[in-house]
Image (tube, rainbow, N blue to C red; front, side, top):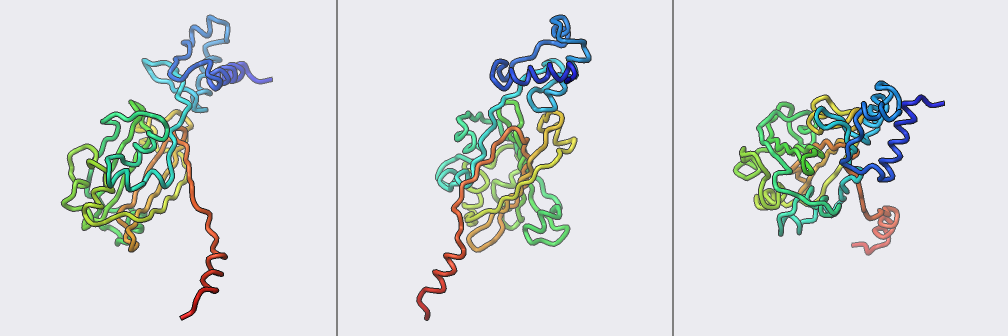
Length: 269
């Protein structure tokens, strides 16, 4: 037989998942649950902590225990980088995700700082730079309303971005079309990318910055952006709150055996 705190947690979890307790709604105060016969203060507290560990609620001083939004943002695949969005318009990738998710975007939901730093080892390797080389780091914190969703830090070789808006130390976005438009205007048109994802436990700093509930992992993204001739013009590291995104990828299925037969059977010089 499950302990009483677990029974209470399971009952509340079911009410949250079926929408009976809506996102943003505050759960009853612990003392009210005790008075309603749901158990002792320790029982109710344990149930609420279990819900928090499962990512269903958040708890904070002054706000109590509040049900978290259960509809994550849809993070698009290749279409989020459509050149028409940033080259010919002003829609950067994370705004494309908002549009696809049917969500709004308000100015100020992305903050930015730029610094000239020694390249971390993974950054130096991606750019083909020696250990200790200096790069520009453009760090962003992205929010939906007041809720942080992810961080993204792009690293650039100085010769690609010096004199551009990307290295403007004034806090704020890089301007119309974002960083890819800046690179395009500087003569570095992006052509293809590689993305790598892995889940991990957040650091204490990340937990505070992203306002993560206890026990929630993060998804770390490594993105390498190339021009048509294979030049790396950006290496980015993103840290995403795992429950705040779904990841969608569409791609053409390769058939290397068919391509090889086509090449072998083609005309010979």
